[in-house]
Length: 415
Ligand SMILES: Cc1cc2nc3c(=O)[nH]c(=O)nc-3n(C[C@H](O)[C@H](O)[C@H](O)COP(=O)(O)O)c2cc1C
Ligand code: SF4
Image (cartoon, rainbow, N blue to C red; front, side):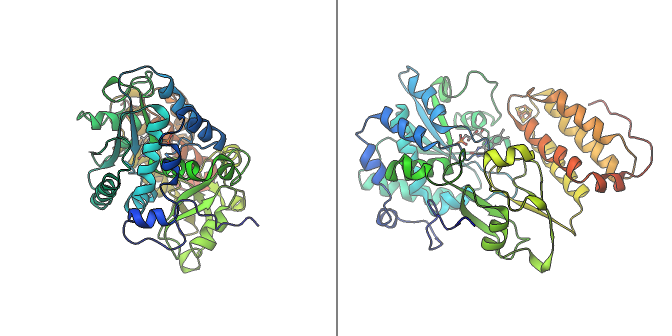
């Protein structure tokens, strides 16, 4: 069985407070920036491309491909943004990373700035992240005092909403506008912050950039599977013995995550299914030993997402859980796109009808709605909201059928 003790971001000794610059340097931190601060930006970009790093914000977009867009743009000013606006229920990894290892994130941001030709960077947080803000402020002070701040970095905060973490909503928030997603194109790499080419990366992605800059693309690409390189941070819920944030290489399994890291389920419960993250499809317990990778989870209708894991055991009311998830997306959608408003509202309506025993018909209506709305929003919340609901309907068809009972189907509602 594959070893799961590869640690690139979270050192063996758990960090309680924020790591100081001296502590970060003692474990090799800063060496990447020292190597590349005067190096060829195109060569740095090539290193990230060879490492095959993909974004850890949930969409797994190839990082080098995103950087190329901004690097190739001609402009008097460019920006880079570290996205730490994490607000997905069950995911704590970005909060944890910024609070405990702010230097790794900031070093990655400085390197992203170097590779794309940016003149300023932003660390984007949300307004309730007081601990993270304090850690980042102290780290910035230390970097400045040590002469390592190769570009100015500002900390900006958005509102405590889910969509505020979407990259163009984050750009709007930094500009002082309502934190709602922008219509794309143009993409941020073409016209982002204040209309200038901007690269937005998740804070975990940037911490990986710092590691790759130090240790090289080959070392990073040697970890993981064919298409999924390096390690990934996961958040385990309090339904396991040892909840918290863990780092595992791609290729490890959910069984290893739950049993070896989390100590297994509490109270001797039996696992029925896993929700790898709230905006993904479910994975049944029979797939516990499938290696975690983009290419292995895709055929099973899911993905690792942002790693905020939820567990379904024999005591979980899966219909109630699906309603709860659908209500979250209905509440959090920002209201700009009619198909998104309609889909998220109607999902809740049909699911609640099924929950109340009002008969069959819900699954077809939900599937039709999801098909109609797909790709019709300014952002991907539409698809993110559909994934766990469609997944639940197919994985827990018997639970839904039992709840819905034999009654008449619910009448469709106009939004
Ligand atoms: C509704 C919504 C919420 C999002 N929230 C976050 C978030 O909290 N943090 C994050 O890094 N990315 C979030 N994303 C993804 C970002 O838009 C973007 O893809 C990501 O920051 C890019 O970084 P990466 O390429 O390094 O993953 C969200 C996307 C959507 C549609
Ligand atoms: S798809 Fe939904 S969340 Fe995204 S911009 Fe449109 S209304 Fe807002």
